[in-house]
Structures are given as C-alpha cells and as structure tokens.
Image (cartoon, rainbow, N blue to C red; front, top):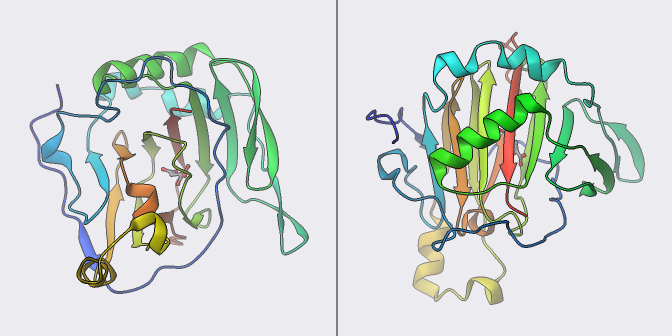
Length: 247
Ligand SMILES: O=C(O)CCC(=O)C(=O)O
C-alpha cells in the first residue's frame, strides 16, 4: 500500500527549460507479465496534475531501512561508464554515468550508441522485487543514472513509447524534475482545433524528486510531454536514479 501522504506541491510555469539530449530506449520485446490495465493503479493521491499524461510522484517510496547502504552499494558496481555520444558529428562524453541491467543478455541502443546490459546484480534485484511488488508490474530492464553533483544533468527529451511504464527511484540529492508540454504530430494526436488550443496552453511543470521517492511515467506521457533534470549548481551531493523499464 502507498503511504497515506500527499505528494509535495507541483508548480507550473511558462518558463521554458533548457534543451536537450535524447534517450533511445532499449529494443522492444513483450513484457514478462503485463498487468491487464498496462498501467500502475491505486496511487491516485500521488498523481501529478497534467493534461494528457499520467505521472505519479510518490515520496518515501522506499523505507529508510531498505535504502540504507544502497547508494554506496550501487555506486560501487563495476559497470558504470560515461557513454560517448555523437552530437552534430562530434564525439562527446556524457557527464552522466550510466549502467544498464536486463533480465536477459542483450545490447541496448542509447542515443546513437550501444550499451551492453548486464545481469541484475543481487543488490539491484532486491530493489527490482520491491518495486515490482509495490506497483504490481514487471520490469525487465533497469538503467541506472549517476549524477555526481548538480552540474550533471539530463537534457529535455521524451523516451519512446516502447517503454510502456518507466518507474524511476531516486537516491541521494534532491533534484528538480521539469516537464515541458510537447505536441505530438497532428496525425498521431488526432486533435480537434479546440483541444489543440487547450494543449498548447499547457505550462511547464516542475517538482522536486527527494531521496527514496519514485516517479512513474506511463500512458500518453511520452507523446505529450518532455522531461529533464536541469543543472542545479548549488547541489553538491550525488544522486542515483534507478529507471525500471518494461520493454
Ligand atoms: O534520472 C532520472 O530520474 C530520469 C532519467 C531519465 O529521464 C530517463 O532515464 O529518461
């Protein structure tokens, strides 16, 4: 059961946030045991109010006892690396370190490069089981992101919809999560004029992801919203996110 607490306030602003990098998701294959609804249910009090988008922000998702020592254990995994990305035909090393795990051996496409997915180590497998049990979902891939301080960020992007549900568990420093409205191509959205105006009037939404919190993105979120974790120079501590994915 989710804790009986209200999610912290979410703010909307017209300020457009910085761009941009893209995260290409893993190749798709059927989820191991998709739920009948294909979405996380039962956490309504944690829904972030968004027009066209289904996002939950669940504070205190992981109990303190379960989180003890977890950051250090994950940071010590041998699989972290900084991918080299091709940006405007230049090779650029990403500031964010990543490590990828999957339930079956494979290579994962990521921003124009490829990353080898490793088997889930026991420390991560334990967390996966907790997340799966609480959300009543199965996740076959987990990408870890390590932001060593507030200078490390992820640019504005959408993940592809092949990631049916993304559940991102935060450990360490609190960081902002910024969601910017996105219009899907006219044909994909199939919106009437009035609806389109309503969608175009949406504002940027921002909230803070605290230590041990969980963000769930599902439904049409990736079609209608982009997300990012901007640079925040005043943040001196590190953060690790565990992004569980269904591919
Ligand atoms: O670090 C996070 O919580 C989010 C990472 C992210 O945006 C992504 O993996 O698509």
